[in-house]
Image 1 (cartoon, rainbow, N blue to C red):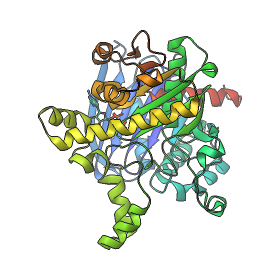
Image 2 (image 1 turned 30 degrees about the vertical axis):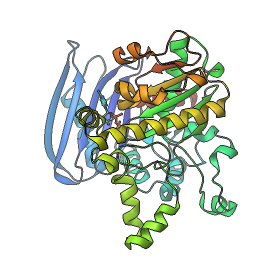
Image 3 (image 1 turned 180 degrees about the vertical axis):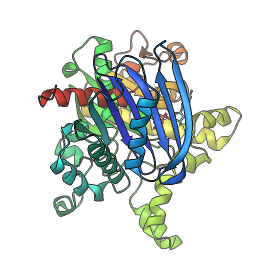
Amino acid sequence: MRVIVVNSGSSSIKYEVFTLDDCASVVQGLLERIGTRDARFRRRWLTDSGDWEEIIESQPIADHREGFQFLLDAAVRYPTTRVAPGAFFGFGHRVVHGGEVFHEPVIIDDDVIRRIKELIPLAPLHNPPNVAGIEALRALRPDVPNVAVFDTAFHQSMPPKAFHYALPNELYRLHHVRRYGFHGTSHQYVAQEAASYLGIPGDRLNLITIHLGNGASAAAVQGGRSVDTSMGLTPLEGLIMGTRCGDLDPAVHFYLSRKTGKPFDAIEDILNRESGLKGICGMNDMREIQRCAEEGDAQAGLAIEMFCYRIKKYIGAYTAVLGRVDAIVFTGGIGENAARVRRESCEGLEGLGILLDERRNSEAPRGGVEIHCEDSKVKILVIPTDEEREIARQTIETICRAGGA
Ligand code: ADP
């Protein structure tokens, strides 16, 4: 039996197939440009000989339903090792916004779909394609259970003092304006991995988890539960990101609107797509930014400085929130690979018991590793995230708990 983890976007479907018994990844695929005559399909799969094989194909795909049919057919056309291509234990769907309704993964039924749709105003770009994926797979394989795993769920343990904005309370009551936090699956995954790496039960650990990818967020995790996180009502708040500004004086919106005459949609677009690292130096790929900074590009250097300074401020804030920090965990494409970012984010924090070992940091290989000095009170870990594996794990657990095993 196998589990498919699905990330259904507006014009793409990303998926990964795991075996049920040992949660091994056996297929990774991406179908892009759905809705065009030239959809692009890339699939890697594990063959009987233990090697990975890859194909890239193009063909017209009208919508998500056709896309999923194509993917299910591809499973038969390119069989992978060990398991029958049609034997699915469950489908695990990444759903971006679970609002205050969903605190944990759930088996999807009509009522769950209705409630995910009710949350569309909070995630207008993400929840609709997530629902399209769920509906397509339910229609194509009604015999297989579907589980929704929410990006926001892990942060539902935040206390009111952390999740409320200081706005009129009726905005919360009437319009659900509050902080939700995102990247929950990643923060939860690396928190669990850190606990098993350190050999300490998660409920006895206080962690600051820092996910630095194209999107970026930090979380304060106390005894395995998120008590604060840097993203808010939307994924725009908090750390500086590839193209998102992160924390900003809310008056900037009104000032810009009055000054430039741009409508709010255009300003929203600037804050989401033209800001962050890209806004500062014109590039949003950290590898390229580092290269340019080394060659003396001052704006690229400033972008890295600002990026790290913001992370450092959150480390300080979450140290205060947690009182005692056992470990800081870096993850995501930048967190796992950019030694300079880790170094500059931890620089000058000796007073908080945070001492990074530069040799360990710069030599850190991929995979879980510690990069703190022997006498650092706070451990500093680099742990690769694996949101798909975590969704697979939660999907299996949820189906078993519901008695579907
Ligand atoms: P996403 O959030 O889309 O999943 P990733 O977690 O893959 O993104 O992170 C993408 C970011 O990681 C990019 O800014 C990329 O430049 C950066 N990155 C990847 N490898 C390296 C590296 N070796 N050094 C520095 N940055 C890296």
